[in-house]
Image (tube, rainbow, N blue to C red; front, side, top):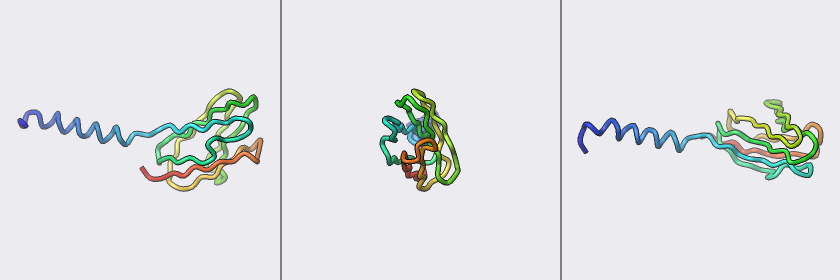
Length: 106
């Protein structure tokens, strides 16, 4: 490879590595007073998106108090994940609704 193409080649390699490290959106559906799936896996930097298919509002509230996301009826809301660990969450309006997110380092 000619040395004049080396910088372009290196930029291509660098861009490919950034693309593979991009954050993902992880969907969780709310329907019939339940989170589905109940357990999800994500990486630090990913965003959980709760999609409310119910006719009533819900929340996705971390038991740790770290976040409390309101999800209006027939709307969606999201939360970016900033640290690794196990996150248990529930709906403040319907405490029998609960879910778990396993967050791993990127």
